Length: 287
Image 1: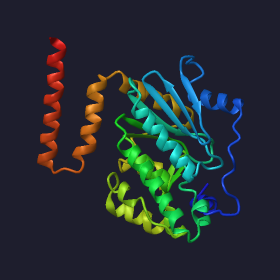
Image 2 (image 1 turned 180 degrees about the horizontal axis):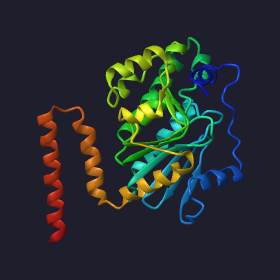
Image 3 (image 1 turned 45 degrees about the vertical axis):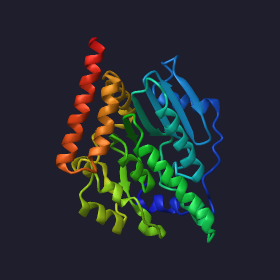
Image 4 (image 1 turned 135 degrees about the vertical axis):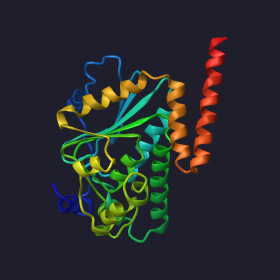
């Protein structure tokens, strides 16, 4: 599937996303793909567009909105609630974010829905608020996040994975910012945190594909795997994180997020303060 194919779906008004009529068989197949069926103690909850699995110290958030997992207002809201609830969950050390289906990891925002808002300014402002809430909740999630990407990841999907801590993608994956072709703009600033500015400008101005090999070479993708290995690689990574001391893990994640906006001197000083605070926790444990 190419950029043109994605954009046809991306900007469709006549054929909006189908209602997700998920059956128990569908859920079983989805859980099997993520290796959860072998984990009888895992807790599973299914929303309209999102399936959440909590498996001890690891959670898996699965976007399931056929045909290409485009993000509607309701999907944004459901994901935001999921991240907010997981942030408050004791004992959680890692969150994997994946997607159902084989056509795309995420086809971006549901442009058809946005265009159906027409000139309703209040509805458009409400949509912007919902989208902002989603990115803020994901970007400030205190628990380390792992993006498990399989297939095209465009627009809002590319922005979302840029806010996660570790990105694992399959050889079938590619990325794009096709907003230029649907009279929209947004997301490039987030990608500039991880990709060279010149590359991001080209992606935003041309809408071209960033193939996974190039994305890996540029440091946007941490690891490239075959589709059949994605779930295992993501789970292995998550459980490696879960083996770390949780207070240190969360403190490190918080520090990495905050120092990004600081000067070199201020950022280093903040890291040293965090080290001091963690050392005090050690001293208290030794008492």
